[in-house]
Image (tube, rainbow, N blue to C red; front, side):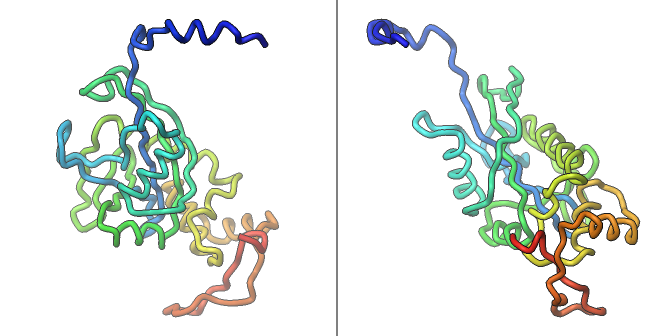
Length: 236
């Protein structure tokens, strides 16, 4: 392909000829907390919408890729390193941010309980439960939390994507440690689907898939008869 004319073209090109929207990354960080599908949120301390809760996020620097920006924000805003992030969807409604035209790329990470707890210990994020079409505080009051921008819509899309895939994918295991009980696996499915499941039917369905391998060990420190531990395919 002949690109000999590119240098001349670029030397006269005016990059201000078109409006340039800003680009942000927002992190949808989901885990199972107290048997409920929950998200890590941060509280905005500056306008616009100061005091509202929001997904951890920020602007993409001119010299960094989207993936690099997502990893940076995970570390800086939440205090986590190494969580597996994947692009979820892009959101570009013209009026989604009152400051200017901002297009955001949402990234999704499914977190284990120890990762959720590590974020809490870092003191930069709080856990809120996804309840219907709202997000509620985890505590006695169960108060609905006001979310900034279009972050409720982003969370709802993420939850709906999970619900659509949980029964035929390995997504449920991302919430769990390498060894887990069938009860814990059922807790994940019920939290994502938002409905209780029949215990014998669920266990039979999971075991019939042939994915689970019994470890020959049982859970520690159980207040009842210790349940058997399983792993996924023997390697995780």
